[in-house]
Image (cartoon, rainbow, N blue to C red; front, side, top):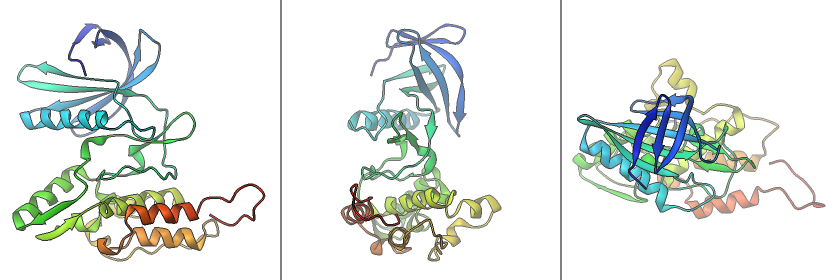
Length: 275
């Protein structure tokens, strides 16, 4: 979506013939940085994600992430304002200009995007009206992957190790079987981790990772869900079904949505129960 980009002055860039002023750094990852910029043409704030591309494959993956943003037009998916590729000698930087959200916090929603492969609280933003918005589409993959052979299994396992946050990664991605099917239920596990974090303030395996213990071993055991008077048995049962170690026993998305609808608060005037 446009390729014109130049640095006009200290802290100012131009993308698609529009000038943006650098405000501050928001964060950084292994190969990307996110800056807060202000559009001098409209006064709005934006998040500028800069991805370092060392090889052609890196540029292709950045382009694919931009394509994923363009593919969807949904209020719960972050839209792409502009995209360009900037040359830096033999290297490149892919620049994705995105809307800026002040809050980052998961909320319950019936419109979760699958297949995502890296669902976690920090990839879910909150809009001005509290609606959840999914960001960082770089880890999206096809809905169903048929693994045939040990070589393909190792390739998928290596990909998951690089792209899927370890404490929110499904058990089947730690040791991919040579003949298996990876489908939407892998994301259901990660979504269960997000739900757990919403209920108890941290992910079920965050502390395991922070202590340096093996998450790969921890996820092979059925999760013990703490008792709490704040949560109904129906909600705890829903979480338990999402966190089932065997992916074949987890609910598909239609089943999950049906269970979520049953947990919705009653209409005004009706008898209220715990959620």
